[in-house]
Length: 210
Image 1: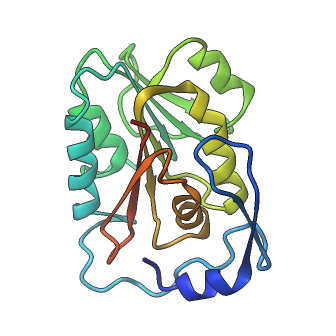
Image 2: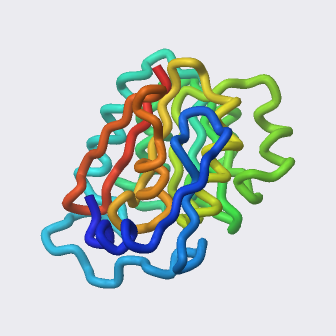
């Protein structure tokens, strides 16, 4: 799955976790921050930034699988290039679906003024998000923000109660960062179905709750 797979297996210990769908929680001797990021460019990967054309096709298929979606949430707002995850969501979701894109840094990646598209500047697991979500339930959650182990697992735990029963959680950079990679390894496949796409580039992990 990852060039760091063997390294992770040698360096990670697993603790039990009470969170639904998790077999355990990783404790890494190299720390919980993203200190072993990929530094070598990937050959043959086309796309802008760290979101390849193939990644975009996988994301588009997931959006199309939810034609009646009412809420999509993205963690980690992408820059305003055509094939970014943010633009793929905005341009391909149904017009009545609400879209929240969340980033700790201020972003201006698409015109505001559309009541269904929101750029939210805050921590992804903060109280401000609770104020926005309230009783809403999420069809698709896309996690591509802080890729550290602690934060990715915290986001999974925070958003899981807000997911619809048949919701889909999507993780980007499962071959690039320890957080997404280890969360995919932690999912109990007796509870949720998992799939890995694009394992030879940046990697996309999909967790289907039903």
